[in-house]
Image (tube, rainbow, N blue to C red):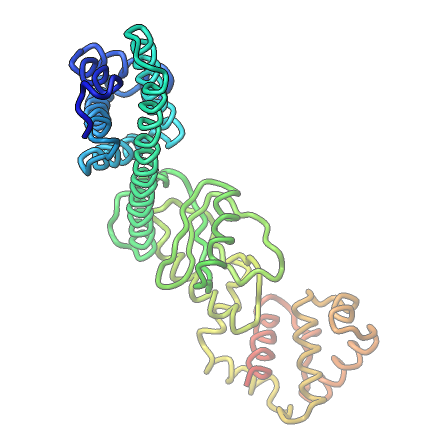
Length: 372
């Protein structure tokens, strides 16, 4: 370290650091240039400024080599401001304002005292080198603290979501509202990258919470967005308050399994999948029903399978010949012919089913027979 008498800038620095007004003016400078920093208690700003100022002055007196204490002070400043909700830009505004004040003060007084310009320039350069290193430490610590807080918050939200879906006791906290109805959305998506895209779309449409529960993306959202037809299958239950979600989560998972088996994609309503879900859960009963209605069909005969597929398409399209023909890419007369042949072979036809129950029986029987 150069003797104070041999370095006029260092001599000025040592003399100025003994003045308690230096801390006060530096604190005011930092608070004046950052509104968010100014909202903090003044003592909070003073505490960090004191540590940094003392460390900078000590580093300048030590040939510009910052000590570990100074770096730790910078890291504490960055970490504290992140936890106080002060963004890194506002943090740097205050820090740079304090640095500029210190530099201007030293240059002004140095000129009045006749400190050579070269010594002043060298001193300012050393200050810049030190503060640049401090900025790096502050920004890094700020970012680490932000990530830790985000991870902690995210983990807490996922835990609440998991407990609500499983019907375990959990007070409903932000970002959810216990009085607001939410759609429970379940999926088979486990890829984090795919889940992130779907989550962004779900939360953009309205207020809600998403996360990986039981290894798959699940969500509670107030509104349902539109999704492309090739989106992985999503099942959405009617909106209910959070306290009533758990039974719908279980139903949604059952509907998801049924929809996956049926090769469905995109966003589907749980109520639209009700019949598919119920019939999927009773395969033995479906086989009995298929035997009763379709017992005379041969599962190894391609023509018989074609008849069954046409009949099922006919029911899926509400008994409309034209819509069925368009879906199968055949003429309407072909649909009529196949339904007639099915009746000739089985003695029955879904076109003659009267009422919701017989129609549902035919639909269930055809799906069970084709799925064997």
